[in-house]
Amino acid sequence: MTRPRHPGTLNRRHFLAAASAALLPAPALAQTGASDVEVVIIGGGAAGIAAARRIAEAKRSYVLLEASPRLGGRARTEDAFGLRVDLGAGGFARSEGTLAASAQGAGQTLIALPSGRRLFAHGREVRESAYDAFASALGTARRDMLTSVDGGKDIAAAQALANAPPPAKGTPGANGPWAATVAQFLGPLGCGRSLATLSALDLARRDAPPDDTTSPAGIGTLMEGLGAWLNVQKDAPVTLVTHGGRFHSVSVRGQRTPIRARAIVLAVPAPVLAAGAIRFNPGLPARLVTALRAIPAGHLEQVAFLLPGNPLALQPNEAVLTAAGTAPPALLRGRINGSDLHVLTFGDAPARTIAEKGAAAALPLARDWLRANFPTAEAVVSEVVASNWGQDPLVRGALSAALPGQGAQRRVFADTVQNRIFLAGEYVPVSGWGTLGGAWASGEAAATRALRLFGDGPA
Ligand SMILES: Cc1cc2nc3c(=O)[nH]c(=O)nc-3n(C[C@H](O)[C@H](O)[C@H](O)COP(=O)(O)OP(=O)(O)OC[C@H]3O[C@@H](n4cnc5c(N)ncnc54)[C@H](O)[C@@H]3O)c2cc1C
Image 1 (cartoon, protein in one colour):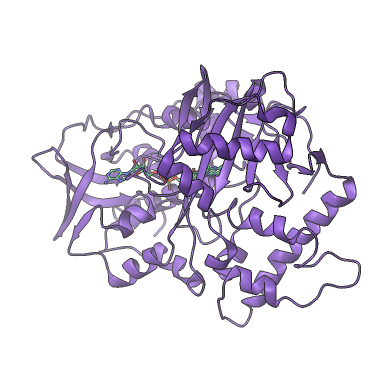
Image 2 (image 1 turned 135 degrees about the horizontal axis):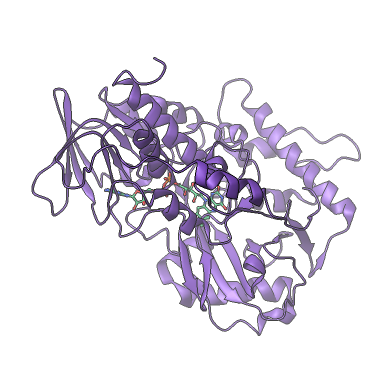
């Protein structure tokens, strides 16, 4: 973990210069309402938008079908207390894939997030040496997980850490003073599940660089902007995909005529597929169904509230992690874009409670966390706005992580299904899973593979 520095503006000059030069092409055909297209993209989150953009750029006919009234999926900018706030992805890593370049090409403004997180224990910021100890404990945990799966056997991440050999003298090992905080950071706060339920292999392979970039308009708004010119049908839930000869037929609830396509990019969340919310005829291969069941959803929910006057003395968009203690674990994003708005992310059991009970459960959780960590701020919070990803039937959780013993299953998602269906989404990348940038990259990759069916791009 590095010490924070102040946020700055990322290449605004370049964004402006690029904006006019990089106007993207209009869709090749006016396809809305057409019943035959070359590619149907199902799901309008980051992965689906990225795929549709690539297909459109290749001047192939397509339609992007999104079940809800808006694009963005788990990137959603909401109104809270008269301000705009992301209650899903709140940033992304610039180095992960081409999302930043696509945003830049579309003339969207991005700003840097403060690097690293601030670490607090018992109501005050820890000393420099504790930052080092935490960073070292985090590195040791990752190494211990990698070592545990070296022989090819995948076990629970918690077991991998418990089995780790004692640390060298003077170094904080897996069982040192930061062990519980590291476990919370990697498990409930990182994947929405405890380390006991997570595959050591899947977690050790995860290579999610820290978020260093956001959009001042909100990541959800950014996504909607990136999809604004696409050929999209919203409120178009796909219910059935039928494979017949050279075409797939895609049925949308409420539409009489199915859409026929030569290729499909399937960009809906893994739990939606695992739940059978879209029917396939013939059914999805058993190997794929098994793999989808092996990566159940983790749960993250976010709770936004106002803290006027900056009582926590934070820079805009600063992230705070607190040492494991009595309060439910949470990550704080403070002073969203310099405002009084703060957002807590809860994972695992508290997140499931928030999804089930809404703001009535989110308010006491937020106040508990504040009481334990910043007692003077607790009384100020009397109202919250909370997300509900866990109960949203179109999403069903925050991100998908493998069960112990099932870490190798993620490779299955690279397979082409029934010769013409290409999977895309946060759950698809073997290392960049669970992130916005990873979802975006997977959408582009799926579209590139679909385009090869038409002889476009390298074989
Ligand atoms: C609380 C929270 C915080 C997060 N924070 C970060 C972060 O800070 N940084 C980061 O990198 N990542 C973060 N993530 C993860 C990131 O949001 C996701 O990885 C990414 O948005 C997933 O994109 P996707 O396209 O794979 O899926 P989604 O965004 O879920 O898109 C799938 C789309 O499919 C649609 N759909 C579902 N069923 C159908 C159907 N039958 N027919 C048509 N459409 C359908 C859905 O409505 C949805 O729009 C966070 C996630 C959550 C929940």
